[in-house]
Length: 313
Image 1 (cartoon, rainbow, N blue to C red):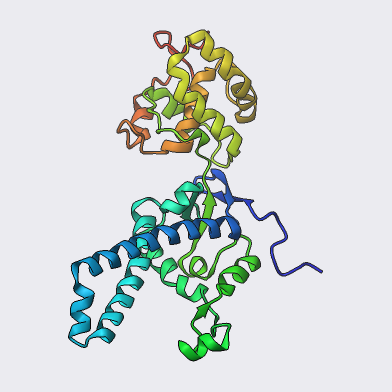
Image 2: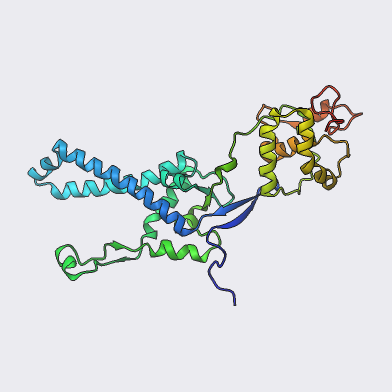
């Protein structure tokens, strides 16, 4: 009998396939790592709120409310201010910081959609609004003297929903994530880099010859991205030597001619993976390039006057 909860590792891999049939493996963050990030953000919010109240006290605003007999109004305003600050802090940071907060950033965590895309303002607001549901159920204060002096009503949050609900779904989503369609992933920053420009039009042409159902493994995507980012520092011979190990099996897999430039093939794979039909250098329609190509030579053939030649690959 299969257990109803997720029996995989707490920080597990989750594959997302884009509409272009490119697969990316995301490492889903477990509840304990997320809890630590939440506590870091909670400490930051607590420090800000404390500093705000100290400033009010120094300014004498609290005394003014007390002297006017408006203690209840002041308490209500402070409660509302604390609520909106707590909610706005998380929602605003996750939207403007592309799915992260100071606490999440320190632990390499990021909020994405179920498809691995950046979240929008609505998703950020909804997932944080439901954070208060995650605090349930509430229980009374533990000691009778505390209940007598303060209140017998249940006011102590337990966060049981936040701890239990993620166990029963594969992506460790809490209630807010399930409603908003989001998940929290562990971000690998060791190979993050800017998107490189592909200035050779032939790479865009060759990208059309890569089978549309080809799914690049994460390790291959990482290797290709690293190569394209650093290839400008290599000589033509060095590019051929480095690119050959990855390009030769791909030539056989894609059924491309053996004299196809290794360097050009990796640039084409990079273009297909990261730039699609709208490249960083402004090319929006590859059909224009196909029409301009010479009919006597395939787009994957390297030109003699290019630094990426068929002979040097």
